[in-house]
Image (cartoon, rainbow, N blue to C red; front, side):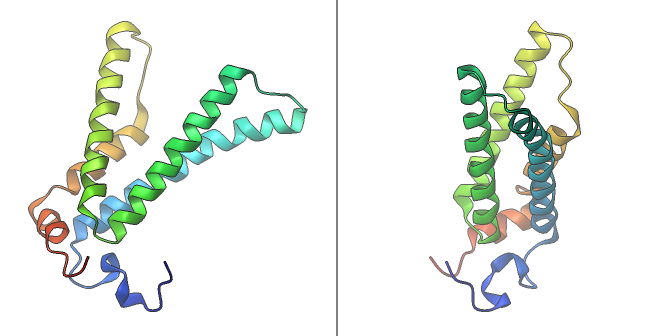
Length: 140
């Protein structure tokens, strides 16, 4: 999609609510944090001339797909797509269930600030002003 002018991006318009702008910024920071975690591991193996095992290849592919999904959701939220907001909420709930599972069976697990930032951003998307903004799309 080619964007010709700034006003064609709904999130950059004046009527876009601040909670949505903050949420998308938090999602972007979480995404960068995840990339910061993943890239050094990949580059280390590459520099050392090491080859990833089957399990590592699957983990890398899964993380790559996860990051691509998150980037797609962020972009869709910028363009006021309600399905992206709902998908993000479902993703956050699945993450919460995984954290609860890990805490129950492995007491050492600590989710960290990235997950909680993601959860806060998801809550911001469902505040009344954000809810109204996502539901009133003047275009398809």
